[in-house]
Image (cartoon, rainbow, N blue to C red; front, side, top):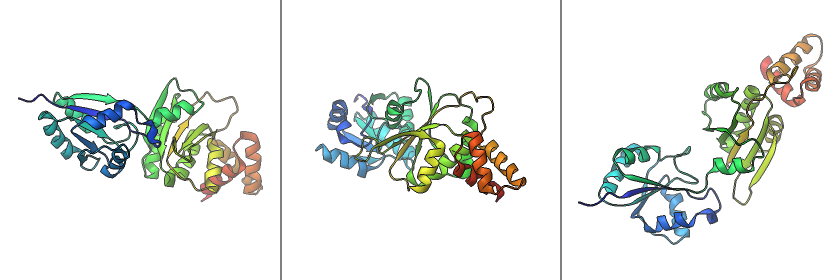
Length: 279
């Protein structure tokens, strides 16, 4: 009877291929086959390093069925490496079901550690990282996104999110509306040619990306909730203040300017939110 094989969970570069560890390279060279979130992406990685191995797709749409097939092969003695498209598998990526099934069947699971977008962003964010809360991707529907943010708006730990460029603007607006104006570090295209690390505030980020189309993949690190200083306004309160001033005869532009001086939010952010409130 053959001994069971091993499942190696292999972290791969999030951009710069030079970040592939020697141990990960050796593992990919020596396993019997490679399971991948996207065989095209992992195929490019293997080709770059001159590795020729059978590739099998194992992604979120077929992971349940494919995991059973991979388990049978490992039970027969074959060794498997699993790779997601970039970074550490399972973290907002496929692989969790495969790992769970392997453990259930007594197959040894070995982590081949390496790049992770979460940890990489935290290391350069310039914020408190002793304790953090990783939220991954927010729900796509606006209602679901706001509901998730409302659930964590009083979280004191640093918050970490992933976001795609086409969703960034609306997410930033929701962050500002629900969480209030906080410090944010925007990590864009990490380890790649156009890498950018920008520590700013949510209100400034909203203004910037309303004027400049987002490009690339983003990791967002947002400060946790702090005790509010006496007299400090939330964005909602600032909007209410501006609307009350319009009832006293001010134009919305004048009211937003006055409220901005009192609360610290940019005039444009208050004006936009107040306009939406008025319908």
